[in-house]
Length: 375
Image (tube, rainbow, N blue to C red; front, side, top):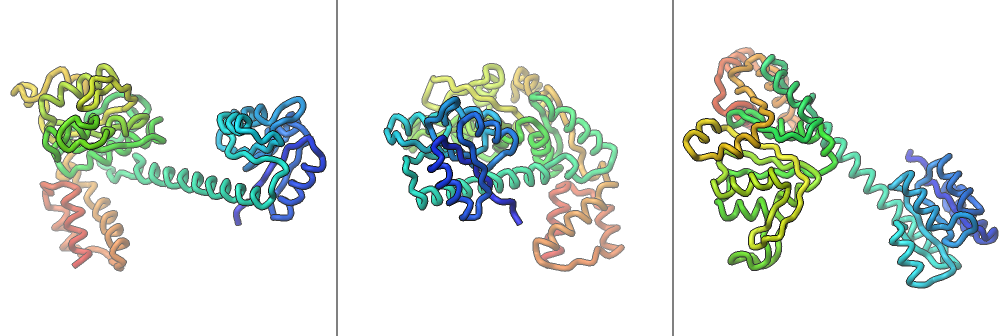
């Protein structure tokens, strides 16, 4: 059973205070009362509530001052301001001050009940969002990556150390080794976890489209640009941007990316106006970037900017001791997803799977197991 919804009613008019608090108590709410703003603030600090319902004009501490003090202590508390001065100026002042809503006195009790219902729905959604984000962080935490081999534990140890910083990280490894999982683990273990993690595959789009995808464009910047569009750098503001297959980034965009890393700002296609971006860059590649630099296909200055910290994800054939763990994990996963009961893998099949070299790495192992489960 969820705890009762707690409301603090603050009003210096005794009759109004008794009317509103009594009505709310009869609706099943837990109600606290205060006869002025200072008493309300002391009550709030002693016993946190879900909603403050306050008169705007009170002696000692006004409703707006109570609103500001309560929000400073708990930014998520809802505050509805009541006033006998039903002017636009008072309403604007309350909403600008951070009020959730605004009611004129005498308060229509049915309207009040409706507003409280809206507040409860909003707080329920905020709570669900927090739970979903926590579940997402748990799902992508470092401990959730399967691997007990020395090579994998070395990589995960480095993930834990770099997560606390804002350093650019270059993740290297063959296709299918789990480079994106490493990027997610870094992001969700960092201070940027509440912000977005945005992914772009640099090998999946032609140069013209990739430029617009990364940096956005202004209306009319090119044929078909019928409206302004924010790019992935802007969408990742306050979080992390994961550039997969960075070794395939065209030379023109290498220059633009270098500028972003140096200046911390971007320019949309079709504009020269700089836009500041607060983004941590995580990059991954299966290519030999040093060889690309020597061949003149990848800028050396960009390489050094990216190569602040390198995490090497070993291929599956070089961490065979992890195959049994991965096998059991993906078998249980696909059996659950397909509604099947799988009692295990025969000894012969398991030995075959353990001996195989997996050129496609973990992704290939997942594909083999999923096909076996489905068929």
